[in-house]
Image (cartoon, rainbow, N blue to C red; front, side, top):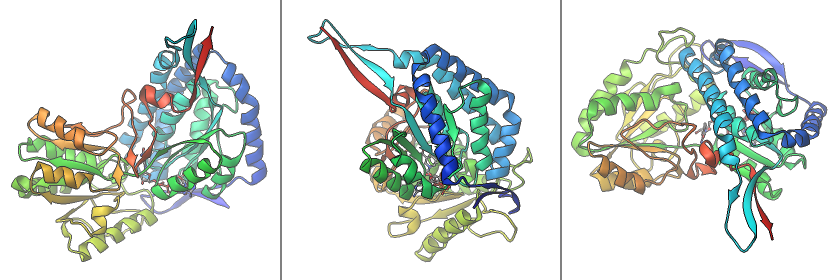
Length: 454
Ligand code: NAP
């Protein structure tokens, strides 16, 4: 059995990498278990210094890693470079702030002295997706390793080279071998790893079905889990929004990474008073995107990551159109090799259509019309997901008030929803539980231990 690297822009197989059998997996887990006590005991300032070196390795090899990402999953080369840089930033962030986040928290009680110590819990398994193949891993690994845990990665099957490059970053930075290991295993082997007594916790970023499966195994083993799952973020446009900025951000937010982002704006909920104007301008912005070779610097719109994902997306579109949704632009599969799908808009999406209820993980925006702000928030919350969302209005106070009513892990007012190491990231409802980034992220995989001294 092999992992295949397939260039999404051409459909050509670039190379094959063998899947590990059980004996190689066992050797890797044994190595990680052996190195873990030493890593736990390594002083925090040394762990932070190594994380700074990891940031440097990322910057020194930015071009190589960016090319790997673009070849494997089709991201625009300039976005791939930005992704590698963002990973370096998160490594620096936790190297700088880790000591402050992990310092003992003094609590006054009946003790002579009592406090909470934030101590590592051991080895954490990360099951990760392909859409930001470096960023998703580093935003887990930087805080987990600084906190004194060791990490093992099961990456998505279509990005095996990225998976191996990430282990290389930590090795070249000087982390002891085994503190971070990439496991070249299939999804079917994940259950066995979670059940292994040498693994203490699991985090998964990916789809709802994968989340359910991992969480149920972790639950049966009584192991901590964090889930970062899908989203169908609302982008609510009110009648007093400044439309130029709103539409520019709408295009960026939906079509960045060819729409394959968990926090992409997916449902454009627009009040009737400006819906026609918004759709007309949105269409013009979307049609200006230039589909082309992602390795070419001038391209503004890349292929999707895999043909099967493209075909699934198109089926969701076709079913929604059959149910009455209106095609504004795109929505046809181009007659060319590779995982291409044009930037697309569906208007008049309503309850009962797949596009209304399901996540569209690709370059298709849906427009849902609302009567007013109350109706818009009702629609925004009429979703199984609750990851991010945004509100567009000329009145920040009005936006803030509505933001607090939106059922999501984050709501931005007049801004593009994005991840930022300084701000917690995560969802509610079927978008998962737990938080990454900020001090919340580093506290997910630690033992918040009470120390009481008479
Ligand atoms: P996916 O199919 O769930 O894959 C994600 C990872 O889980 C891959 O490593 C995959 O391995 C593994 N996996 C799949 N089924 C599994 C199972 N039953 N048990 C254990 N592991 C399993 O998701 P995807 O299509 O790659 O990613 C897209 C989804 O991820 C979208 O829903 C998106 O919104 C979500 N996402 C969420 C966030 C967030 O932060 N909330 C960020 C990015 C993406 P294989 O590749 O070998 O199948």
